[in-house]
Image 1 (cartoon, one colour):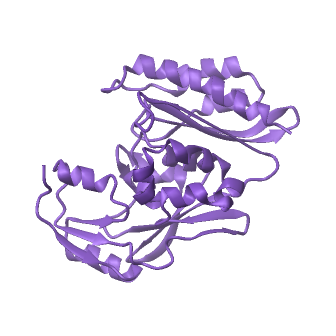
Image 2 (cartoon, helix red, strand yellow):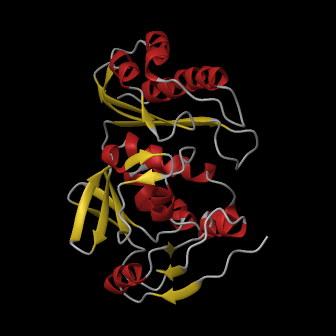
Length: 281
């Protein structure tokens, strides 16, 4: 299939992109385009205007500042995979990146695009939630910062307004006490996950503190398993797995039933919890 007709404009600045978004009621931003172009070709979306933001300077940088790692919205997945800063300061993201689709897609897909698209089966939104990250958004009224836990609102739905541009994400830089874990189940390598888990914690003596378990592929948004988090802090893996019965209620979808997804979620927690505990100081 071919997309419906649309106009094209290339923004040279953030202000220009925001102004262009105001010119059409059905305008979309184009960054990596790896999700957008597929929906265009299948006519699942039909914007009247595509605004290419790839020419905007300053949105493709990675930098550690004030104890946090900031990743620009236009940083490509492949660029992030090669980044020593991400490997050192955001090891959870470094672990997740190779699981995203295939190399050809990672060469073009962007960090900001993945977060803004908010696919519930995608890896990076869950990583951002697990790390307690935040998102920088710029719109007609200026810049604001949104916590990851407040950003994802529903299926492919976020707090982004029609004239908003996501410009960067930010996560706390890892320390010697940081512990992370990641695992997912897919039908084939590179597919979206039937169920996945991104986790972070802080080593605290023989146990863990501040555990954050962010599931993906089991709901309309990435989901934290808060009861399991509380139990896992005591190192009780089996009890944490049992607590998932109250934390998660996955719906059926084309890949698996909700019951299968919950089973997979429990298996994932067993694997990821051991990753966290094996790396304790």
